[in-house]
Length: 149
Ligand SMILES: Nc1ncnc2c1ncn2[C@@H]1O[C@H](COP(=O)(O)OP(=O)(O)OP(=O)(O)O)[C@@H](O)[C@H]1O
Ligand SMILES: [Mg+2]
Picture 1 (cartoon, helix red, strand yellow):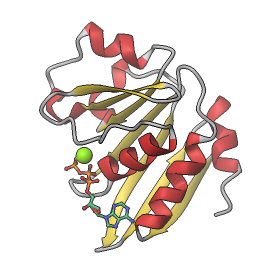
Picture 2 (cartoon, rainbow, N blue to C red; picture 1 turned 180 degrees about the vertical axis):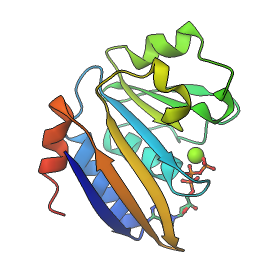
Picture 3 (tube, rainbow, N blue to C red; picture 1 turned 45 degrees about the vertical axis):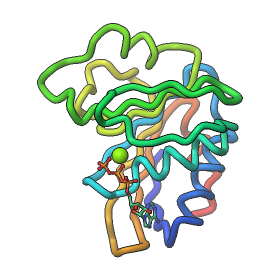
């Protein structure tokens, strides 16, 4: 299942994050792709808030992986710096854990990602607008089917 959405302003991005957060399950994995500034971290912040994470979520670019407590344990990974380096087992352990994982630049570590996941390709349109191609199969298809776009 795949849809293309237009996110007009931060509110639309927040609504999408809230929608997806309603469907998470243990082991849920979301892979984000998109240029610098496309909105991957911004989306993750809204998503974390919707999952009841109280701590501020910031870009883990320099630490690669951060963990947050909410309704589920949320792991936020930024794979940008892992290109050609590979992933250490501790990262995979979290991606395949019972928590919820969000991976920015997920295609960089494609070989460490589960076969079935939810993916979002974000594209800058203008200052406040983003396009998103959201795609997923199996348990993830329902999330996309239920979007009104
Ligand atoms: N509709 C929108 N959705 C998401 N972000 C938006 C939107 N409109 C404006 N923005 C702004 O775009 C910027 C997106 O930056 P963000 O750090 O989330 O991007 P990123 O994809 O994580 O980039 P990087 O690859 O550098 O980590 C933020 O300043 C955010 O406020
Ligand atoms: Mg980011």
